[in-house]
Amino acid sequence: MKSSRRNFLKIAGITALGVGARPAIDTIAAVGGRGPTEPEPILKQNEKALTAKQWAMVVDTRKIKSEKDVAPLYEACHKIHNVPDMPIKRHEIKWIWPEQFHHAFPDLHSEFLSEKIHHTTFPVLCNHCENPPCVRVCPTKATFKRESDGVVVMDYHRCIGCRFCLAACPYGARSFNFFDPREHIKEINLKFARRTKGVVEKCNFCVERLAEGIEPACVEASKGILTFGDLYDPESEVRKLIAENFTIRRKIHLGTSPAVYYIV
Amino acid sequence: MPNNSKGMYNKNLVIAGIVIFVILAAFPFWFNVVKSAPAPEVVLTEKAKAAKECVRSKEYMTTDHMVLLDVWRDSVVRDAKRTYVNPKGVEFNMSLSNTCLDCHSNKTEFCDRCHDYASVSPYCWDCHIDNPQGGIE
Ligand code: SF4
Ligand code: SF4
Ligand code: SF4
Image (cartoon, rainbow over all chains, first blue to last red):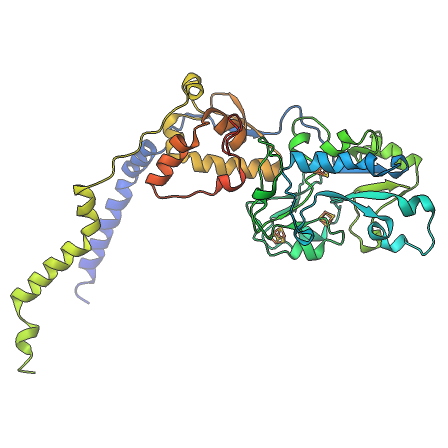
């Protein structure tokens, strides 16, 4: 191994050159990069935003006298969120809709019901479950439970349309866009985005309104039928209503812990 | 062997072949040198001109607007943070439709020109409305 010494010196030389060049490379990189003096931008919550540990809703069904009392809720929600009005029933997209007692509460249904309950339609929507099965099955985290306030949010950018969540949600709260929804939006709200074919959508508890410090649109349109508030604030309106009245929730035996309560 | 050895080792033919190959392979490069489309010019609306500076510097926006929008998207959708405070301390509502396109309400002359030139087709506008002010779909 005659040449080993020679090789060693060669390698050592090249290494020394590399180490020596380091400061020069660093300088070049710094000049090429963005000004190191600029402070980092800050991302923060809106100051006027409404906040909670877990948003919840109470539906006072005693106040629903006829279909007319609840129709404005559906209209308000679907209008501001650019929810399409699909011509064929099985392609329907819905965020909040009327349901009869035996569909909304099949486990509480019995053959003979009070006339009143029998004839009332119950507004149903995503329950923003505390233990949401839709979130567990979503392979892309397109559906997630927002840590800041417990809203089960959809990130439409990530949804791949696999529909696992449709199968997992026991409340039918999710709709899939089998067709391009954009052609079927009656009156477009220019402040809110639309969805495309191939994604799932559902009620978002009006996160865009909460960020502006206002209550959900359906609550606003409900004339007191719906109440919105923080489930973990004992002073909140929803907690007071729950404390003073007997309430039911949909299919609680499944362990999803829905955050929408119904006074019957 | 003796027969095709002449063909295999004909120096002139081989070199001519290589030259032709290089010219053909480099076609996109010299074609563009001869005839390249001029870089597009983006048009600023009066409102954008009046604002003087965008959310970040012009240079940053030119090269990194897609990064900024990506950060905005995740922040708004996933972290419920909708206010952006730029390095100068100015606050912005992180919204493509309601902030960016409020000033740049001329998508065809502002966004599309460059995107077409660079041959990228972002699908933002499949969902996001391109001009909340003018109300043109
Ligand atoms: S109601 Fe359905 S969609 Fe909404 S959080 Fe519960 S499981 Fe998910
Ligand atoms: S359809 Fe979309 S939201 Fe639902 S599970 Fe699949 S990726 Fe998640
Ligand atoms: S909370 Fe908002 S998104 Fe949900 S049903 Fe009511 S209006 Fe629609």
